Length: 247
Image 1 (cartoon, rainbow, N blue to C red):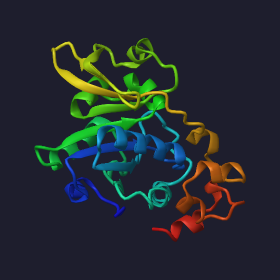
Image 2 (image 1 turned 120 degrees about the vertical axis):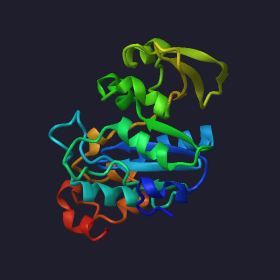
Image 3 (image 1 turned 120 degrees about the horizontal axis):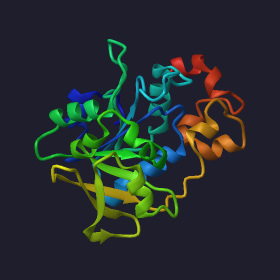
């Protein structure tokens, strides 16, 4: 089932290995699904939570589409994915305050059974900006990071994006062609696993397709349940009436 859920319902979606996948999803596209599928296959994840964010601190102008529209679009995008679920864990704050990933992860962690494992999945662009995030150095210790890297990225590239004070080293078990394993350390000596999905050939990004939905590119970019809901010539940014009917 891909029903909306919040932190209080995480356990219902089951499994002991849960990945939080946050972002604007403005709009969701095949690149998001490819990253989630790769992470699920490589790490044996039971559930990947797609969590559209209410207000990103690093995007003061906000998203093109309203949160309710992005929520509906994401629901459609994952409709055919049995182990993907829509989450309200990063929904807008009643106070209007920004959403901080660390706070969201800590709230999710508190709701999961003690034996569960929580991961934080992100793409290459998000990881590149990680050091600018709120209390960034604490995030990998709240949930193990799974990062989808660009082809050819090296260990030096990864280290350059790390929050100040963190170091990265290859784990004793290097991993496979589908998954590279590393260990993160902070100045206090704490360790956290770090997982890299290497060489993902993701051809599209949200910035390239946001606000446009014209053939033939769109059918290549969007999941079928999402695409089939909209007329091929419709613009995602100008079809709120269609989206409103999906809630």
